[in-house]
Structure formats: C-alpha cells, structure tokens
Image 1 (cartoon, rainbow, N blue to C red):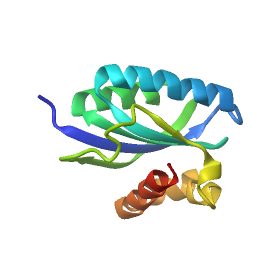
Image 2 (tube, one colour):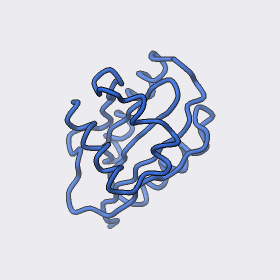
Image 3 (cartoon, rainbow, N blue to C red):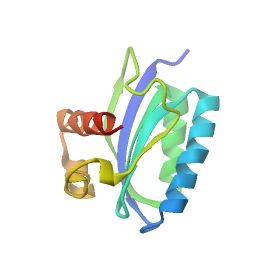
Length: 133
C-alpha cells in the first residue's frame, strides 16, 4: 500500500477569468478524487492555479502528471512534496477557495512568488487557505 503524500503545485492559468469553468473543474475533481481517495484544496485567480493534493503516492503522482498535460495549465511547478501521517484536508474531495476570501491573495499567490517560496512559506500559504474556509 502506498504511503500518504501531499503535493502542492502552482501553474499559470491559460483560461483567464473563467469562474464557471473553474467551478466545473472543482466539481469534477471532487467527484473523481472521492473515488480515488484523494483530498485537497484549489485556489484560483485568473492568472494561476495553486493546489494541494493528498492521497496515495501513486494516485497523487498520476493526477499531477495528468494536470501537467492539461491545456489549461502552463509552467506547472511542484512547490512542496512530503509524506504525511495525517491529511490537512481529510474531508475535502476538492475544496475551492475563492480569492476574495484571502486578503491580499493576488500578491500572495503570484506564480513568481509561489514558485520561489521555501516549503515553510508554502505551508503558511496552505494554512491561509484553511483559515479562509
């Protein structure tokens, strides 16, 4: 049996300001993730996706590879990856966090900032997402 892994990534959005499309992505992801035992959170603004995925290592790695090949994403970069004894988002198949819930989120969740963050800074961003929900 695979160990539980948490992988966080940031990618540039190629869909612009498309809230309906992103809502559909989150709904589909929640259904698929529930079947596969994956949990997580998704933050989106019209410029980036920032997502945390948790679950069996092989399953999460497979999902990341699928996302990497998705035409709605560019420049996907893994910003944190670690094995964990417990999940941060155990009850969220895929929780969508709107940018309006996090003060200053456009600045905090810029691609350039996130892609250069230390793991400790990424954890702070993840905790911002948790608190926003």
